[in-house]
Amino acid sequence: MKLSRRKFLTYVLGSTAGFLGASILFPMLRYMIDPLFKVNEEELYVDTGLDVTKITDIPIHVEFTVKRKDGWYKPQKGELMSAWVLKSGGTILALSPICKHLGCTVNWNSNPKYKGQFFCPCHFGRYTKEGINVPGTPPNKPLDRYKTKVIDGKLFIGPIIRI
Ligand code: FES
Image (cartoon, rainbow, N blue to C red):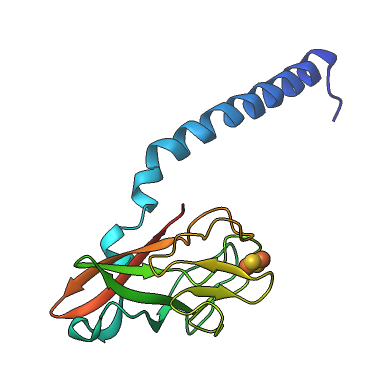
């Protein structure tokens, strides 16, 4: 079959226009149907099983499992996470244990020299009980916090609030 020059140009121009049109239309369509793929925030809260009456002004280490997909990676049993939970002025705080300097794990009261503080062993970062970075130590931001909810007397931990 012989292709005329006119037909060839029609195909080339048609497919180029189709490609350009699709590259404009696809993001618009994606934007319009995006709310359908949004996860309801209520579903993001995880039951820690912790009885809220056990939460005091002394931080306790709480572990919980989050089911989520990270790109193509979706762990079958979920991802084990943790938080330091305490009551401060009647409010429940759930602090991330990830140091805001370079991401090591902070521990409560782990350095006898700095009683009553969170301590990061990597570069001696310190935080107050409420997770505020101590001036003059490497971290320059407070610890991140998780959203929390109390349902039927149990602590539920939700999405992280990055500070
Ligand atoms: S990672 Fe915590 S002080 Fe550096």
